Image 1: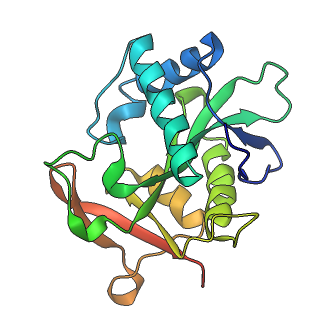
Image 2: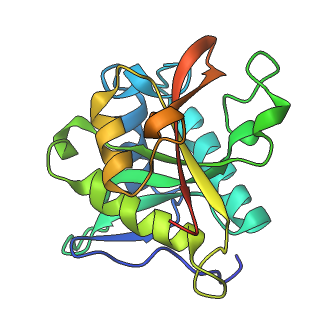
Length: 201
């Protein structure tokens, strides 16, 4: 595994790669097997098997090797068990696990999206907001300490108000008329909210 930079620790959180341990598989299952958590994630498909979690972890580690970013495990800095409390990361919009022919749009090829998924026990504590700020700054910070991207985006179901608040708190803004969010076609819908953050921001 290559040595690559990671998002900076925050006051409460740090970031690492997911691994194939039972600890990490159990933590991933807590997120992706919960219909309430998955209500606004991708195509809303719940995953309930350890094999599915291993496949997710494999994709994430492969993406990290390929482009230097991925969906990382989020861990509480004071947790001696090193157990993930959620996941956050970056992914090329048209290469994610949902990027099949039905949703692919060539206009989105250049977009890198931020994604954040936390189990219900982590909701309401500001953890996603804290993690998103660090990951966004890492994405836009010049190399070698960051990725040097020009722009990252957040794509969010319009009814997912909590996720929209996280993105806005992390510096993402609407680029439509009067600063309103743009909308885009994803997941079979035409009203997915698109927010952006650029290096100039």
